Image 1 (cartoon, rainbow, N blue to C red):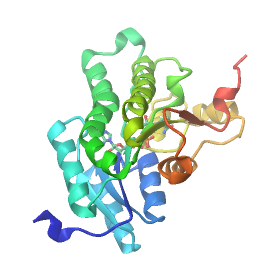
Image 2 (cartoon, rainbow, N blue to C red; image 1 turned 60 degrees about the vertical axis):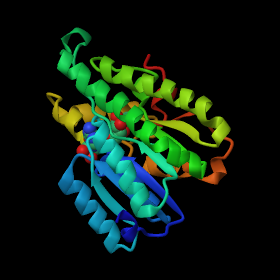
Image 3 (cartoon, protein in one colour; image 1 turned 60 degrees about the horizontal axis):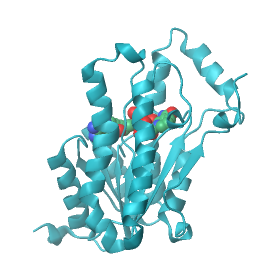
Length: 260
Ligand SMILES: NC(=O)c1ccc[n+]([C@@H]2O[C@H](COP(=O)([O-])OP(=O)(O)OC[C@H]3O[C@@H](n4cnc5c(N)ncnc54)[C@H](O)[C@@H]3O)[C@@H](O)[C@H]2O)c1
């Protein structure tokens, strides 16, 4: 039955957390460049309205409501991707959550939520996508964070998941190099998204906090999702055929600067 709706496409991507922020930027960028996209996100309204908008623009897009923490939902998202586009070339493990707390003040529920989204979710998506990616000699792109490399205060659990994602990326690259599947990670700095807005809203003086972050960035501005998407597109392309297991920082120079 699913095959009746199949559309012939040259390449197809599944983007977790594709309804908003960096994921939405990647979905828009990919779909404007002839990559069919499955937006796998737990936010139904945003996901559906983005897919509708992309379709209206003539792109190939579908929304599959997905909580990446749930194996059945992930399995279904992958199945619906392959049923609709006939293939899966690119998995972008982008969905993630963060919570700011002192290390000992995280609850077990915080720990579970962050680990399950940022690590278990990426693992489940990769596990269920891999046979399809192998068929296309495709690519995995994991969205980690600069926090995987240098940490702010009060974000230790998130930072641990992102460092874990870099290690997972390297492991994937080794395990699947023989079958032509490449895996790379992108570490964004401060990017203007829902996550950024929520972090600023948590500050006692959001305006001052945003200014202090902006001042710390050598390029002098907060990044935009459009600053991340072109690198994801490149890493997914045949131009990046010799790049695997690598980590790319996109942070306006933030990590290049010693805060002394
Ligand atoms: N914004 C930044 O400054 C920044 C910096 C470094 C890394 N990142 C990383 O980039 C990625 C995207 O972040 P963002 O800033 O765009 O966040 P965002 O909160 O703006 O968007 C995240 C999207 O993921 C979805 N999502 C969350 N949990 C999910 C789940 N369990 N299943 C499916 N979808 C889920 C949300 O519905 C949302 O659409 C995250 O992994 C984040 O850690 C962001």
